[in-house]
Amino acid sequence: MPDFDYLARELSGKQVSGSISAASESDALNALAGRSLFPMKVTLSAASKKQAEQGSRRVAPRHLTVFYNQLADLLKSGVPLLRSLTLLEEQTSNPTLRVVIQDVREQVADGSRLNDAMRRHPKTFNSLTVSMVKAGEEGSFLEEVLSRIAMFNEHQEELKGRVTGAMVYPLFLLLVGTGIVVVMMVWFVPKFAAMFDRMKSQGTLPWATTALMSISDILQAWWMLIVIGLIGGIAGFIAWAGTPDGQKLLDRWKLKVPGLGPILQNLAVARFCRMLGTLLKNGVPILQSLRIAKDASGNIVLAEAIGNAVENVSSGTSLAVPLRASGQFTKELVEMISVGEEANNLENVLIGVADNLEKRTSRRIDLVVRMLEPLLLLVMAAIVVFVIAALLLPILNLSTMQR
Image: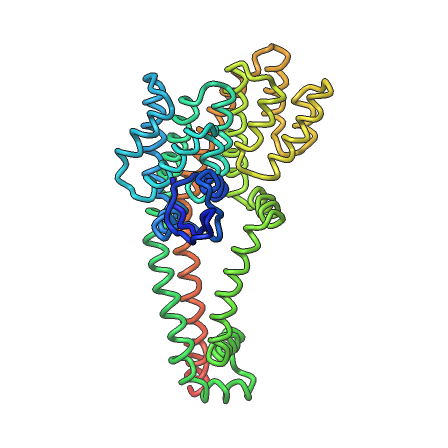
């Protein structure tokens, strides 16, 4: 528990100071009152502040994956949750994760549910993880959920590694090429300005060269404002994306991006189907399962569509009908859900759909990753060819005219 430094008065009026351990500031005030002390000032101690700041930092996904796997294994072996958290707190080598686990353990010891304790650390446990843990606690299959989270994290890291590995070389070339182009624009191209100005006055300057000179002039005159504008634009976008309206609009755009949109949509739908199927398979009622599983999609637009489906299902409508009306689910998927409802086998159908979507999406991701490298190289080559052509065309035209 954190330590609080206090300044208080005794019944006699004597001023005293010291430190007290408590779960919260209100608990510290109550503890001081129990000692017949009248608090004047209660603040979190410097050591506890440092520990809290450390606990609010992000934890590398590989450390979290190990934590989820170990916690799942301990629970499957029959070790109680509180004891499992204590063991993991002692064993983890990551200091930030140790602080987080310590706080989670203390909250669980005080009677909080695991998902509520994890929700206190949004930088460590994202909303999807917390929602899945909540579903596991409500459906009494926490071990399975933790294993699923670990598997999902491993898949995400594997995907990130594949994409990063495929893009390192073309991005390096693109970065170097962009640097060379900027240097040429700022220092090399202006040396041809006098010759190009004469040709421009004669009306013989190619349009590509005219455009190149205009870009060069803009970079030379406004480079500082351009850099400030880029930094400000990126910072503003990040701040906007963190707002509820920004997140919703961004999630809507993600689903519409050519090539990437269907992949993100399939992954979100697969997560929803797997979570809903698992909940139903473990005996959780469908309305409660839908309310929990809608957050597992990780997309606000899909979550809203599923939330609307909950209202329809509560009035006796089939699940397939509102999902079809939302336009966010394919006809094939809706038809399979409809058949699953009619056959009273919805949970198995949903898990099968999730498996098929994940396999199909994995193949599509491999294809996109393989296409990224030649695409980036093509873009870089087009830029370099444009610059070279814009510089050489006037010289070639001039030499032809002199002949």
